[in-house]
Length: 330
Image (cartoon, helix red, strand yellow):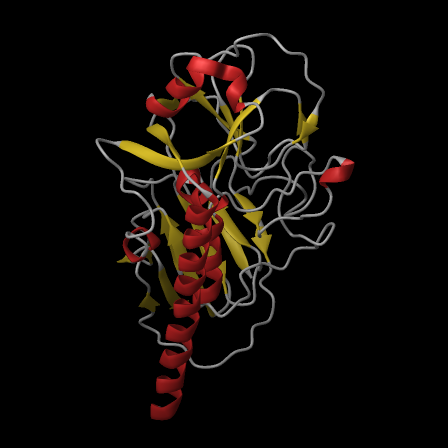
């Protein structure tokens, strides 16, 4: 069991979402940075889909009411366990009564906490993710509040180094796969979508200009500010299915990137689709930061997917070898 001691709005229990219900208007939800969430789970021996905590407002503080293994991933929040500083992408043993504190990150927007066994809340439609708009899932369908107590499911047990262990952050481990930030502008790879050509000359400007993440952005969609782009002619469109990564352009001409709580349908024209493998980087973009869309191919997406899979497999193998070595010396 863990107890929440300090928190802000929008910190929630999340897993990898509830796919398969978009046809009845239910969004998938789930972690915004699915890669960080997966890493946090693998470091404590969970399946990647186990439920953890997504933290996006700080400071955040909790108390461990029993001994357990936990992990940190995502934005570096200058975390401290009873005053001891912890690195990002680190797994650690906590004793009963110890307190963990996460502070506002210098870079990045969201941190993820994994717990061996996973957060034990009732699944809704096959997922423990919180749907804030639907008010279901997670802990009573709401964000966490001071005084909340969350159960942690029983773990497989086994030895664990009390000093903990860490893994190479994905931005370093996958530096050859993902284009680097240049002059403070995040490159986000995307593929032209169905109505791309409807924007004629403005379509080129979509790719070449830097867009700013608006303060009106949230888990449903990132609204981007910049010089508006508009179709060459007004076309009345029927609503169509959308999903995370779809970039729509409303009449005002400033794009919206659908995120984890993406709408299930919409009628705005689609100019591009962000590669699924790049959404984790976009999820860590802060309000007011800049990004630029980079044309990509299906081959780029496949290459990134294979690299991420290999990286996650390496984390699993590293953990297994570490525990095996500890067992041999026990």
